[in-house]
Structures are given as structure tokens and as C-alpha cells.
Amino acid sequence: MIEEYEERKRLRRSRFRWRVVAFLALLGLGAVLLAQNKPPVGQHIARYTVDGVITDDPARDKVLKEIAENDKVEALILSIDSPGGTVVGSEILYESVLKVAKDKPVVAVMRNVAASGGYMAAIAADHIVARGNTITGSVGVIAQMPNAHELMGRLGVSMLEVKSGPLKAQPSPFQPLDPEAVTAKEDMVAESFAWFLGLVEQRRSLTPSAIADIRSGGVYTGRQAQEIALIDALGGEDEAIAWLESEREIAAERKVIDYGITEAGPLDAVADIFGFARVDPSLLSPGLYAIYR
Image (cartoon, rainbow, N blue to C red; front, side, top):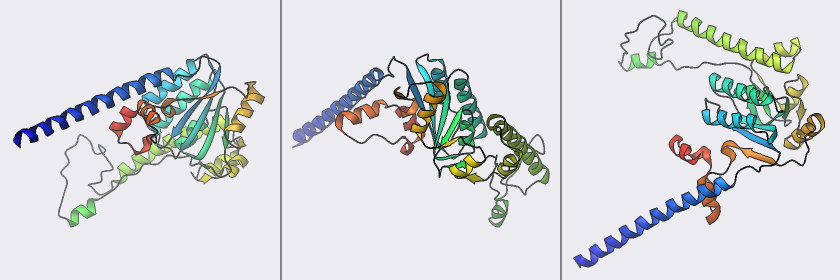
């Protein structure tokens, strides 16, 4: 009986090892298929998708740099569905798109939402298209921080701070609000907002009344945004391609190729082989997402 039990354990271990080997082999095959599935060598239009919260993303900026330097790319469609993100991440994305627009026409296609940093990315394009109900705008900067010192007091908990200056790490969630610290933070927000608003004025050539309107940081539908020149036209990718053809003489039949994280990864290739549903990157943890990409 003991020998039979040990034999079953050995067989289970052996099967597990072979399953691991087979899985790794399939991943390798997926990587090979991905390498073979590169954009065609002919002239084409690149599509880069900006989804979700915008942060500092070197991989994203590398892809946009490759698009800018690729002679086979005639134009870029920047597909945006983002509520914004960090100020620095949005600034870097804006600059990366602007570098593409230096030598190639860029059209921003705003989908469900292009607000704050999402809208900042859009204004780097030569032409902006949005749906009639696309949430647009939110031109502004915000800094938020919790304050729990009253709750800590009720719980009998205090925080000892030893710091080099009165404004270091202020405002603090563990101390009463310091008016001087709040003023310093307001100055930072005001300076960043002036910079953002300056970009919008420069790129969109808005009227004084429109500038006064967007100072509130409010959002607009695509139709409202068109009325005050935050966008150029209503529509989607078809309208973007039509503009490229009529204004930049790029053939409408040019193939549109996805670049960046919208391309299939090795796990996608494996899923395609077995007919499984592809992985939704938004559901992955940061570590798994890095592997997926």
C-alpha cells in the first residue's frame, strides 16, 4: 500500500512538471507569434490608445518616440478614454505626443471621457474629434490629502514629528491644518493651473469668454466643447481619417495599426490558440500587468 501511494505521488509530481513545461513552451510560442505579428513594412497610420489614469510611463513614451521616428508611419490617431492623472504624467504624455506632431499629423479621438490630463494629451494633437456626449474638459489641478488628527485624538493616538523645517511634509494628516502650509500648497496648485491653462490657450486659440468659462474647471459634453472650441469636430475614428485625407492628403484606405499595450501580448497569443478569452489588463495586479505587457 505504501509503495502504491508513493507511486501515485511520483506520477502526480511528474504530471505537474510536464504541465509547467508545456505552459512555458506555449508562452514561448506566443512570444514568437507576437514577434512575427509586427506592423507591416508599408506606409500606415498608427493608433495609440490612452486608457485609464495617466501616470509617468516610460514604456508608453518609448512607443510614442518609435512612432515619431518611424518613416512608415504617416499619421497618428491618439485614442483617448481617460479622466486624467498625475500632473507630471500628463505633462510627459503631452510632450511625447507633441514630438510626434512635430513631423506627422496627429488626430485625437476622444471616446467616453477626456478630462484633465486626458484633455491635456488631446490638445497636443493637430485636430480633436469627440462624440457628442464625450465628457470633456476639467481643465484644472487638484491636490487632496486626508486629515485624521481629530479621529486620532479621540482614539488617544498622537504622532511625534521631528523635521527640518515648519513646512516639511505639510499639510500633514496627523496634525491640525497649518494655514501657512495650506497657502504654500495653494500656490503650487495655482502655478500648475496657470501652466495648464496656458497650454490650452496656446493650442486651442480660445476667445477670452471661453477662457473665462473653463477657468472653473467644469466639464462639458462634446457638443458644448465644440461650441467653445475645445474640440474641432464631432465623430469618431472615421471622421479622424476623413480629416487626415482632406487636410493632410493621407489616403483613407491606409491601414490603421495599433501600437503599444493595445497589441497582443504572449498570453493573448496563447489564449487565441486555445480559444480562450483574452486577458483584460485592467484586472491585473501591477506585477502581473508588467509581465503581461
